[in-house]
Image (cartoon, rainbow, N blue to C red; front, side, top):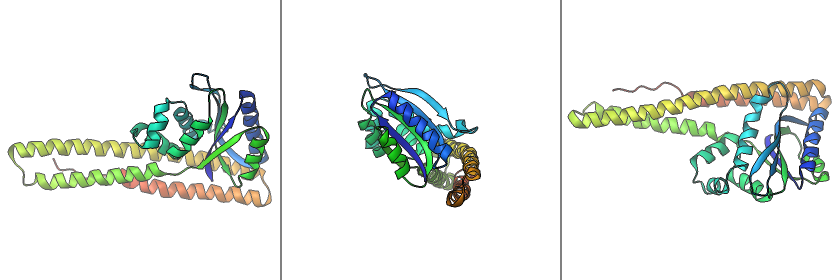
Length: 264
């Protein structure tokens, strides 16, 4: 239920009304608003940030995914096309880090024409109708996608593949000599450096996830404190789910940056 939302409007005025509506829905307890930004697409096709707003005291932590999505929407047309075709490594990583697919970026980019504006937000919602109805009444078209954690799995796969390469090179080094040994040592060193790079990124990712999970749990508990009945239980349950999800993902990332043995 952690989702990226992009609501496209025909004008900036409507987009600001949409931004206010999201804040009101957060205050009412019908959604949890983690972070959002108002953007506009200029006649030349450039996307600019009109207003960036982080919700709550930990908003700068939770605004990372929203900011990354805005950056992708604001990139050149080739970024969108390349990401959709799977040809741009950097763009694909950014998409995976945001937790959405290239098709989502493509759908939004095609609808976000020059002269239009949008509200980009990361939210928690239990039902889609309340937000959709509110945005449609303001003239907005809503695009949403649940966030996934494909980046974490990729780190683990990359680390496993590199460890396999290192193990093979270590085995060959035992019987190598002369020039062949020197070549193998160079390859082993290059593989070690790539592995260390992946491990470092996985470690940084785990630290970011910890900050993000703590901030989300805090926001959910704040909403639970204001809510009553079923909604109170919903927010409390969601906070527990976020905690459990973080612990599982942290354990998986731990396997990616666990120490490996390299013989030189």
